[in-house]
Image (cartoon, rainbow, N blue to C red; front, side):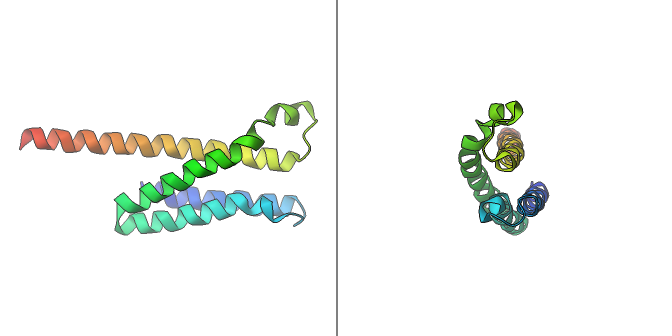
Length: 125
């Protein structure tokens, strides 16, 4: 899971950098995915040493990122209709939202699997 976390961090940094370039460096808010990615990347590096703390920290950041991007994702209909006020923000937020949702699902699945393995090992002992 730490390697997936590091990969997600790098991917989000790339999304933020591309969005910032696509907006002609007009708004620092285009870098929000990159900021989230940097925090998740550092959490993944922490996870290499202490998986429990690093991955939980990354999951908390991911959930906060999901909540933060949800408002722009709700404007996806306006983007498709061509009426979005900030189309790049909606597109970037949707990509970020989808990546973070996938990561949280993978993280929860990883925790459930670890708990099952621990329970099975306890029964065998």
